[in-house]
Image 1: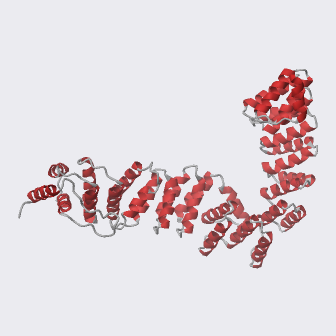
Image 2: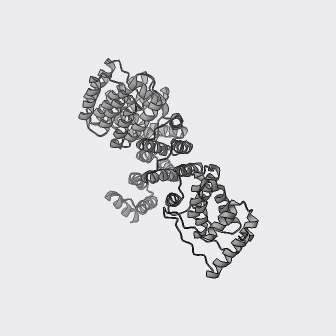
Image 3: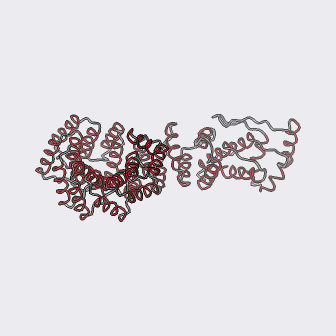
Length: 553
């Protein structure tokens, strides 16, 4: 029997006599065991005997490694007992033979390490291969390679958990979630640990929407949360400033404090309904009910809300009646949902009746209830009722929302009641209300319509003091008012300020300025403004075209 060293030299010389390039069969994309050959066996034997890298390099100095040879050696060492030798061969071939590992050899090695539970080494290789292929056209190139080599390496599903966890660690959470979905489509379900890791990482970013998409995906694929999941999702609600809103809402529906799991699940269903994915939300809600992840009374209330969102008021009322028949009490959330629907349809009398019925039942209206009534009444031009609800709201130490308050102010100003509107703003400011640029735009427009230029300027200065940037409508009202009062210098001043704020003047502003310049005898300036207006793509009225012609004449 020849010594091992002599046998290896004989094999090498024999193989190179036949060909200058080793042509070994490639079985990477097959489930069959690769055919063994003497060179593969010889290399594996040397690693099993514990030869050091220098000795291995001298012994196989004349060997030129190719993809097929590397992959077959790795597969020969795929059993857990040989896993460290496979890793040794992987690194030796790269460092001492300058072999450039491809996706396939990385994948086989990763599978071998995971199966042998050498998880630290597996994670390091996964991170390395992801860094190498981060710019690939397909974000699925690495997972595809792992899937292709899964069977031939006799791998285990844990490999995909480690892949997603590594993506999460590298903050590639969009790709991580896409890979999760991709694997689910191919029959591989990730562990709860992987989902928790991904949600935890995403919560620390500004992608709050993705947190809830991942949680929805978990539930749809029957991966139910544990305490760690719920704790992370509660943190996400805190970070988004939404936790107290949901807690208060559930207190109104259920009558007492709900568990963190119920808070999280309710917030998910509401989010889905508000995004008008009603069917998805209802399917998920039924699953939650079967698993006791949400209370019946909350489920009924959410179904009513969903029906109203769909515009199906009759169906919502049927669900509400069923809810009462089954012994569940009415709640302020459901009442407010119906009040909002009636306001939207302009049925103010019905909304008022529901408000009265709600209070008679001992249920407290809350900020959303009042906001809906303030805005609904204002849109229906029932200004006195809108004002009354606003005053009631503030007397209960609740502040109106900007949208509802602005609609009330707009209607008052349209009716020539700018002073009353301004008085309501003063009252609201004293209570802690924060107006926005639209609030001031309506008031400036209202006073401008009444020719109260001093009040217009006061409001403009108030906006500046509060660091609220005036809108185009506010500047339009201001400049037109100044022009109507013959205050040319002030009008030109605010025109320049407006343009410096990158606001594009409209036809109304240009025509007001052109008119006053013509009136003051500044024909050249009027002509310049006409030409500027046309260059901006604005179409002046016929009368101003005539004025421009006069200026040219």
